[in-house]
Amino acid sequence: MITASQILEEYFTLFEKIPIFTNPSRADLREMGDEIRFIAVAREKTVYCWDANLAIHDPVSRFLGLKFSTEVFWGVAEKQGSKYVVASSDTAHLYMKQAKRPASMTVASWEDSSYALKFLGQDWTWLDKYFEATPLILAIASTWG
Image (tube, rainbow, N blue to C red; front, side, top):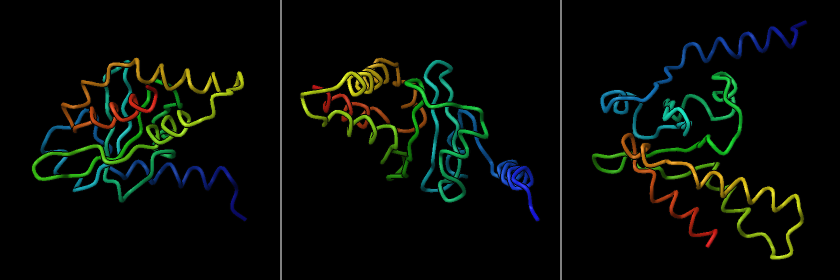
């Protein structure tokens, strides 16, 4: 019989074999391929990137010890010509979905909306150094008026 701790040990050993780049160079981005997953942390101005085909965000976030917050941005950047562009984001999808709530908001949903506003209050412009993220951030902002 296999125990849960054995499964977790094998699971996290897998991540030790996946190259996760921190604040990658252009050469690093090219090495990862045409589709890159990333987790950006605003306060630290740090972005963690890996080949999108190797792992999804949640387990990598857990492996890195990162928790969901308004300072964390999960996304996928795709190569478009000679640059990388943020094409999708779980974070953006969540906040855009919350923006479409009815006007009669409960206290709990108002708290949800304040998360989006705190996220938008972060400085994400530094992320454009690695891939074009500003258009998606502006799209989130436009859903909030």
